[in-house]
View 1 (tube, rainbow, N blue to C red):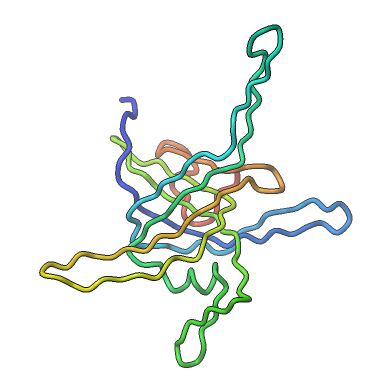
View 2 (view 1 turned 180 degrees about the vertical axis):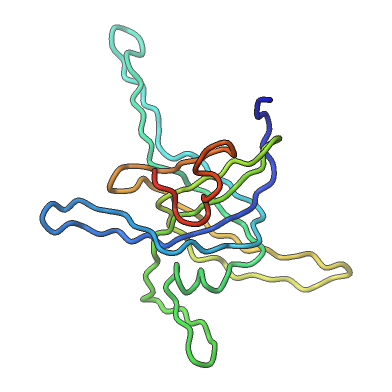
Length: 187
């Protein structure tokens, strides 16, 4: 049976990216740290970045030039895990348990992996070079019925500098599916 519909977001994971330049050639190699779970996924919205530009010749569209600069969008979660603040936003935690944000903190690129349910199985995605914005801080009082509050980060996903890979995905019948969240899949 053909896969026809997509629903259900789950299994969000991330891994910190290290980009190393070869001193003699300047070529960049991307490597990935330990894959960590990011529980509580609520929604994931990405819009393609780049454009199609028509080139006119002979009184018509002669060629359409395309650019793929990745995606922009949002990830909404129940709560952003503390380890994201420490590992991605590069904030620190002191002996008293305070997570400290400084103006000089430098954010890190991460790979984000996730899964959508299909009508028969799942489809797993890996986006290889993601930069997150710091989330807004907000809250509201509890009224007659409790309504969970969520947290959202904006994402900018760009091609890897070493091979221009933006994302990969696989369905349940692919060999890469079973170990997908154990380490960042090799494109």
